[in-house]
Length: 158
Image (cartoon, rainbow, N blue to C red; front, side):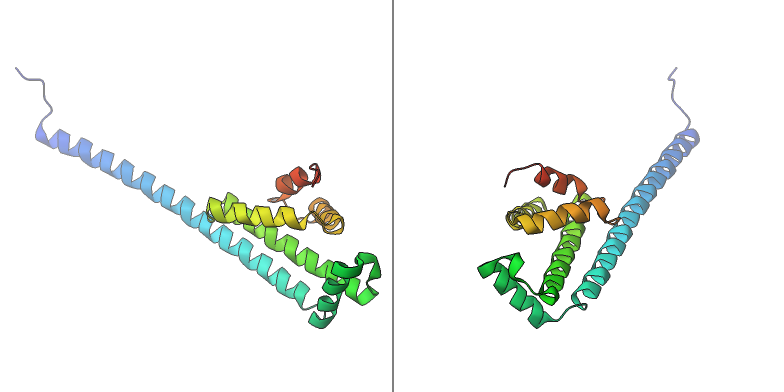
């Protein structure tokens, strides 16, 4: 005599397994949608802060500051130019923080992130910019996602 389940019981088991599998899939999909929503909110908040910072100084003053920094160093800046330069560095920091967050959340390809990280390391060869990043990293409550990267750079001789 064969020891098999009747067709009805087999169908019930298959149905129960199907329901459990679909619930697992729905849960995974909800987690993914939540991650996408959080990443979108993070990017939106970063962009609002960057726009606000960039609207706080005159672009011509910033352009003059960049030229002076390149030719004469930060010490040659007027107070207005220094303000514009510092604000721009802070906006860059927020943009880099957002990119690091997007990468850690899985929304940025490795190749692009490595290029951005290389650009960041190049920027941080400037001791003034590096100091501003380290300071922002220690005081900025929105920087939790880039802290490890900045701390790594802070302890690296560039």
